[in-house]
Amino acid sequence: METKRPVAAKSIWESGKGLYLLPALPVGLGILLGWLCLLAGLMLLADATHWMLSLMLGIGLFAAAYGMGRFAAFHRRRYGLKTGLCCGALLYGVLLLCGIVWRGEGGSFLRPLLLLCGGAWGGVSGVHAVHRNPPR
Image (cartoon, rainbow, N blue to C red; front, side, top):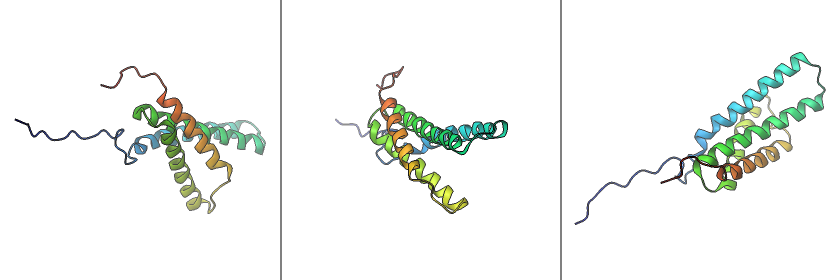
């Protein structure tokens, strides 16, 4: 005799629909916002040149994509490169939309490269990070 139990719903991290990107987006935006606050404080306190500010902004973009990719891949536990690239692309899409709405321009060609590389690196390192509680 077979029981007719309902099929258990998949976790947001296991679904293949890209919903795992939604919880990771606030992580990436939070890292970027924190970095921009530090950069604004640096601009107030020190007389930094344009190339130094551009370098610091590039580091912030890379760190935001890395953190977002690592968070998503750590919780998903598979497909690190794909997850990281999707996180970098989503973050680039959000920043591109904000740039077009507020400034009327999309930004430089280096921005997607930084975001995709940071997201990919974060995704690969997130999958290979040590988990305290292994999956059941």
